[in-house]
Length: 512
Image (tube, rainbow, N blue to C red; front, top):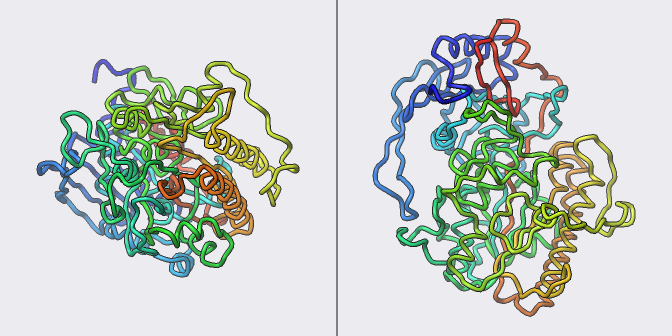
């Protein structure tokens, strides 16, 4: 570790911090604390118990990744991640019946895998602190709607697939992981494995697997349109579609397959880490975009990726050992065009608005929000602005429809093989009002109307029967309790523990 500007903390320093974090006064706001004392061994603790486990490899999966198995080495008290059931709270009524589940009521799907992958990154923190499901940290930038944790409601995103090559299964009693989306898209397109990869491999590196239960005919789709509804709670989304408030999303659900139990985000369950996980099929600890903020241990510098000031350069942290769906499409399907609409993880795409901005080219400014179609609500908040997100998503529709119509940005376009569209409005609204709020429902209605414009454009292009559609989010969204406030940084400082807290949960212990 001598070559690191910020080396890993020692045992004594970590134990001092743990004693503070797991103390009774922080119990309402601290759910779990995780760390890795040595490669291949992992620890996770709560105020109720401590679990140590080991990761072992038993060959490889069909996709070529190690087939990990996990062995519990030590257990004191109650396991902090006792329940790992992805079907838990599988429906809006069940979810709302326990609005702020404690860890005994909660579930942590794929907890071992998702904790371990994070510590594979050389810049992983000394301790990862996960907020309790009820913690409201508005004074530190939090909101009524929250995510970031392993807990099921914060980790579960929607998953809908429809169209060419997709089995029309309706509402399937299934769940998956967000890292499974990229290899499944490539299977729908018939993209071959990379050179030297096993038959199930679709990317140069992947943690995910092809969702074969979804696919009726590999390679049947000549085009895939994937839409990310940032920050959308799937139980809320499915319920709004069922009640007729999202008719275009409901159309795709009726046409294809919806996973009732959604797609589980990787840890941390935050924005750009999981946008990148979806598009690379790799966990954050492997693709390199570790969190919204972290410390580069080689330099000691702070890294901030998920901010408008840094989106243009965020992908410089992408590991050279991974590829995006855009790269894979070009490698495996020569002559293809891939498009990235309003997405910072745009590496390998033929079109990206961020590429245009990097090149210093002017970007057309949309009209005022009050003049936009499909904008039915207004509110202003410094960090989450419904009107700003409406403008951004309006430009997404313009980009998509222009490119798919064959003439956009001063050049001609063939119909793209792969198109990725990032919608931001849902995240702004679900954060502001919480997942069950009127503003959250309004954001789904507005986004659904914009999706309708995309579907109309695909139909006009004449390739509807050859197009598959995918709808996902980057994480879920859970309602915080405004009465449960607090800040562990204060307690650590009072105890004399030197720490850099990045992303409000990645703790780098400095000893100062």
